[in-house]
Image (cartoon, rainbow over all chains, first blue to last red; front, side, top):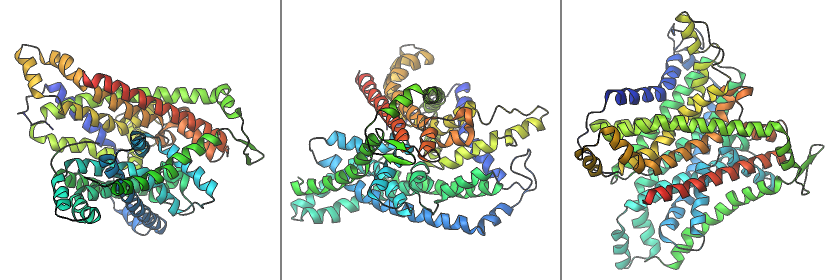
Length: 268
Length: 279
């Protein structure tokens, strides 16, 4: 990032325009939150009869809670899998050279831009062909595989900022590569690893296209919300959505904080 | 500095995983697209029937064209919203720069389902917007939900932050001295934007447009939630072919076309970015 100059005054229309875009980005979410406290009905204007009824309903909704637990399990598995493969992948991008490396890199990053539907159904074909039964396990495999792209990108960005002299020093002082990896490389990457874990976790908790194809009998949270949406909108869904939004907001803010702890350099 | 063992150990496991869980599934997709379905079972015998169905059944062609049209409109709108916003945040936000940047980026990662659903509650028949219109004494507007318009609106909302990110990054990399030089030499701020900022922001705009186009082209949630029959897109066709219609081979053929289209767009965008990035 370039050093910030003293900001010059923006023309008024530009300020207004920027404000309008922010409004466009946030108004729907705010509306949703406001209506989760609305006592009268789903819509209606103005909202009336403020209530916590929908949140109380949530608290005693067993199907919903088991979906939350399912999603937590899937997201944890996705974090473990995507870090376990994303870390070596990032190291390979950074340090190894072999024929087809550029192609390998593109393949790893492909799920970032490919429609989730394609990732989901091509994995479905793999599992169907190999006779693996669909369950939360296959959803976790799918999320983990798709999100290696995110983990590797985050960790690679961290590697670019890392002080390589520490590794050189460790090797010069006689530590083995293995020991250097565990005692120097991994600890220096602690923050990027944590940031990657948070981001993968948040994205997995919210994922719907891949899950849609790979899920068995047990629903993840987004799929549970989805199946309720098809039966009709209730303010309870607004309440669920508000809670989901609050948690992912907290996770993303934390991710951003951690990311900013290192020297500043932004990349996707 | 790193031994061959080290390099092998960090390369082989992710490479093997990617081959098994990404490349192999894509190859399966490819081969399934040449199979067919006879009386409820998949026949593993090569045929081009699926591709001829795609070409000759006007339904598929028209859904694809609609998807491309919607994605193109979403791309243009996202750029039109994201560029002034990125320009404002990068050049005029001052001390609030970091906060404003975060405010745009948060929706990129957060609650895709929630944000698509929010539009349904707003645009719906008994939704917030119609209730507001009635409250103000207007008649309710039924065209709002279940239309391509609703899909465009929702997708623009979802993918504007994706267009913003690379645009903002490219604006941040413009040396401020160039802007000063242009101003000092007497160019108006409008002229500076046109002749200095825009050309330098072009690679970011191309990357942002690629994200917005490719991601909205393949979106299946927004059309299903707010699109109605007239707003369905190509991914919805794939989903129904894999679900209720149970025609995996045809579904595979449709998705393979989508996959190749996306790859072609990304490849072309990469070339364009390189071309305009170096000069």
